[in-house]
Length: 233
Image (cartoon, rainbow, N blue to C red; front, side, top):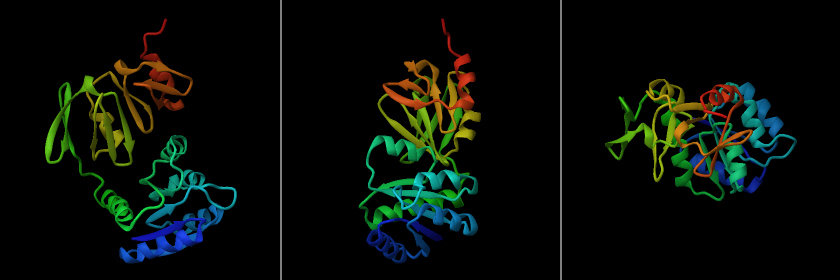
């Protein structure tokens, strides 16, 4: 796997280069400037990008990730930003991971291996569907999930995180395929990364849906259809 580093901290970049070498991967190069990194990515298309968020120049790591989305190059963000706002903005680019600095070799290895597994085995699934419910594989056991238990579902590439009232399950299935197989009119796509349960919706703002005080983004592409399903007065 050929890995590109985009990082403006020279000493940290050198450390990551060493970790990549120790893990047996090829290091394609390091850029500290978003615009220069973007030009290289578009011409070279690396297998994976380890991307800092705060970069030199006009483009942030999130900006670069948005611009290269069309190329479908996997991105793992590595950043000192450890707050909810930056995390949510970064996750809208649909990255393969988000690592808060500092991190060690084992943490980096686990993220890289997950990328490799998803890219090479994208169709393997950990779920099964029957009427009124579906089953999710958890530690080699298929756990039953009733449709009415689901609060929302969030996509992470080829994985789906299924949020219930008091727990969360993860299944290896894309959100588009999951949407096709869910047999419930209450589970509705509201964003390219989210499905919500209409019966769990507690409030709606201009851009978000509120479930258990958690804001779920409402995408403009899905907004009209979502609102049409509500009993508004």
